[in-house]
Image (cartoon, rainbow, N blue to C red; front, side, top):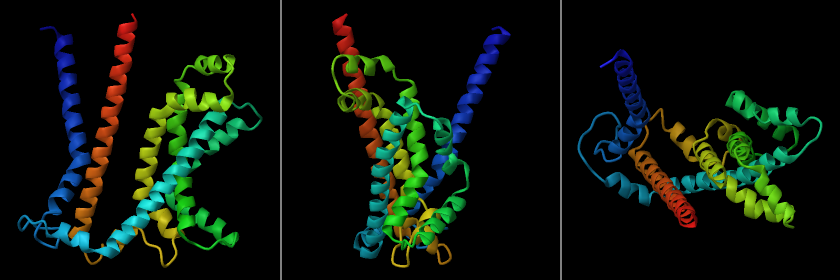
Length: 275
């Protein structure tokens, strides 16, 4: 066995070991959270036996479900606005030509670069100077400002890899720009749109800083409620709720990946039959 083969095997082994460590680093806290949602002790410190009573209490806790409902509403509306604005912005900037285009495109990255607390304070000052009262609406606007760059970047990356001749062919065949966007451009960038939507939803769902600055006294989201529990100890009901959220997220991703696999399989089969 030559030195090159030994070196390749060593690099491959180190890469696998690093990947395993990375997965453990990411998912070990999630596994602990899921395990302690079935812990018989109220303190999330020592394991004292298996129980499902926290799930039973969770489904009878109307206050917690109301807080989660508000959080889910903020996340859904933020995602919808962010995806619509981000998609139209990415497509528009890709085709538009005007002075100052580069400056505007680069300024979109500011919410990613600057600290989130700076963005929260700046947004709060804008609302105060404009005489806008804090409410669910201000939370949604603030979260949309946070997630919009991520959606824009994801869709822009998909647009860069898209062949522009497909859109040109549609326009040459008599289709208007709206029809071309809905039937050619949008299906082509749909994986990027879905990725941006998932990212926006997860960011809005667990945002604490911006939401804390832009919420009024009557509005509370799940991250704010969990943060308020830290001093007294987080209830295992929160572990149960987050376990349910995580399970739904995994199921949604699995459904999306299976759908993509089926679509790719059908496309490959059509190409094979046409040859």
